[in-house]
Length: 195
Image 1 (tube, helix red, strand yellow):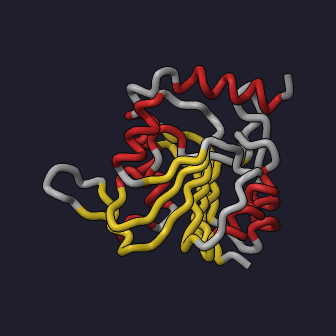
Image 2 (cartoon, rainbow, N blue to C red):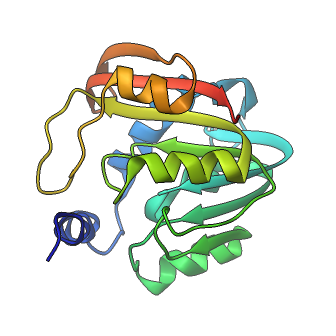
């Protein structure tokens, strides 16, 4: 079994039955802020955590069972994730009119999206550089939030650095030490134009 396959098994066990994703969704709200999505944020009378994307199309690389796209309105969205989640997760995406592709980000060959979102995903993939190439091919703009300077472990086969991300993204992201919303560590984030 490869390191990546072991990491996928670890990740599948971490999500369990996907019934309680609150902790991950709380982190995603911070990721969204750092990726510049708060300008789209609105309160719909039920929840202050909605984003009106005014009709753009978004491809979420590795969105898992609770993609940020589930909090978006006026969006044509798609999620790529290799894990086989419970059937109710797929139905949730279907009801939200979000396409779900159960495949690796490296193997995805889509194009024509306005934006690609990569948040807390590159440590989990087979080949981070290929995923970024695919994101650049798929969309005009990339919104990125990744943890950097963290050692590899059973669930995270890749360690990322600011220098590497700046090089592969052809830009300069922001780096910040975070200690809020269950997010602890060095974060790298930014908005990048696909070249």
